[in-house]
Length: 277
Image (cartoon, rainbow, N blue to C red):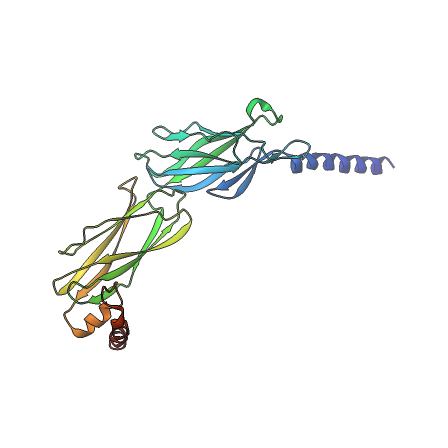
């Protein structure tokens, strides 16, 4: 009997120990990752380039020690203990989602960087106090992947050629990237600013032109607007030939400023160009 009582007592103590864990306060992170943080947990956010800005967003909802949900439990979200040269901005107050802004130093070298995030129940009104989260990110220049296609374009002199550029943003920043091209003597100096969102792959069209016949290696540069250290290059080949078939192929590349009655003829010309390409 004493052994049975002891076993029951141990089981009851175990249940009591587990219940507070399930009812404990938490912080639910919604960006740039989706994870629930409990007391004692650390938060790894991902990768960011030197000089880039990123945001950490949490939900204001949490539970108290009894397990009751408080939808406006956290009223402010702050960032502190940032590395030297970094900058931070605390959240607005009393919103359903609370975001802090963090900007890494443009001088940051590759490595792991730590800082502190704090969810605050202002005035301890809901008896939640403050919830401190040790957080860290990795600084690296390799925060995106780049590809361009087609690898070889054949057009006539002065005809538009469209290069399609794919940017896979593997980092946590949504800062803009700038696309430029080099290697062509004619007008191709225009830059295009794009914003591929974090953890997504985005595709963009980039037109180039050349009047002089020849084989032209085109270098595509994609660079972060925040740091010249964060960049990648890829190459395509532009072949400029003067021919009727090239003229037909070019019809499908750009917008035609001709009367609509000629559109069926243009469609046939483009189809011929595709057949004999």
